[in-house]
Length: 133
Image 1 (cartoon, rainbow, N blue to C red):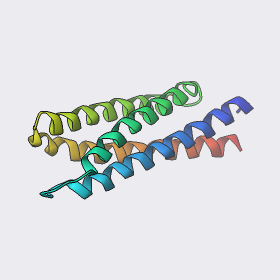
Image 2 (spheres, rainbow, N blue to C red; image 1 turned 60 degrees about the horizontal axis):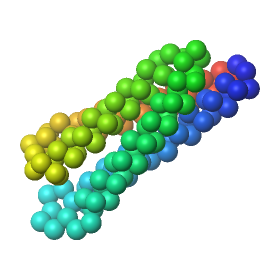
Image 3 (cartoon, helix red, strand yellow; image 1 turned 135 degrees about the vertical axis):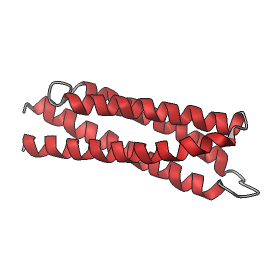
Image 4 (cartoon, rainbow, N blue to C red; image 1 turned 30 degrees about the vertical axis):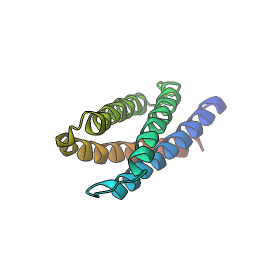
């Protein structure tokens, strides 16, 4: 693997890891306001965090695109993660802004799917890094 590809794999892995930390923050912040009478500022923190995670997922997908020759599944998975996170953000906006709390039944399982896909992408990045060594 070339030096530029090795750097691209490291950058992808870093961005994916930070994206997953953002997703974890989303779970923590959601846990602070779900089913509470007075959610205080946690809904706002969750909303801002959601938009930050979208930007991080976009950066991760762009990094994966540079690796499409090294592993096309990585690129497909990272773009899929971005799509799921955008869908998740839209559902969250509908839940809070349009008072569509019934969508929570989709919002939570999609969050679990996002976690799973992010962990899978981490394992692919690790495999590529081992192959580069």
